[in-house]
Length: 325
Image 1: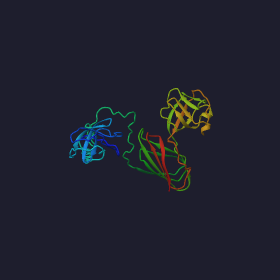
Image 2: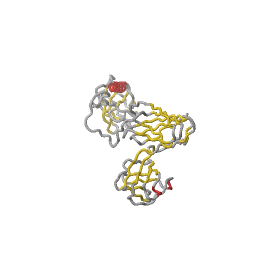
Image 3: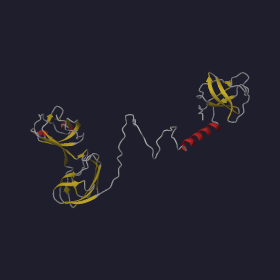
């Protein structure tokens, strides 16, 4: 069905000497300025006409539309673009046809159905990425344990993902073992203290490397590896460095920039420490803390504490939620 255009409040008058009879196929109007895009409908007296062309002030018309009768119209008669029953009925028919269409969609006859069907060929995302859904089936496995001697608390992720720990001694570090490599982990740790105990949050669990190819450059506060072994370090990580001759280079540092061959860490102006230039040669070990980003602001536990951690790549965990009860 044809589409007819419209312009709000558009009207003019016949400016044809003597008016028009019931058979002419054009009409001259006083002013066509602002007329709708063709084709459009006009009404003169009781007759509806289709306008198929506009040249200056002359309208080319098809007479007697929508069951109206072609008739004579006097000079000065009002010419209006207004809604007609035919336009509204066509619009509704088009809508219901589209709504009830089960064989194609939006005029496209080569569509993929909601269920079933096969796509072949490349998908052009115009530079955008298709993200892997993060909502996956999750089964909670509860493991209960007792921490009764001061020292590290080791939680074996191969045994569960919700750990209920009765605490009766200080926790000097938390080690998460057997994290599924390159997998998503959601972990809840529920501490239930029998008194007041100190807690040190996640201990180092991931050794980046031990090698003799790492040097230090104090001009940009960086560690540099000629063997390009820093592939599993990210901005925000807290790394722990040991093995250098210069004491200033052996400490914990927050990573501010990283490539496979260079780790830049926060200096004293950024709340970190200034490094001392040192050539490679020492056997240097760099490890990474399991928890990156914020750590729970809870140095002591004296009531039930629930901590939720999340990881998208196995052994690198981010704090999601902390609650005390």
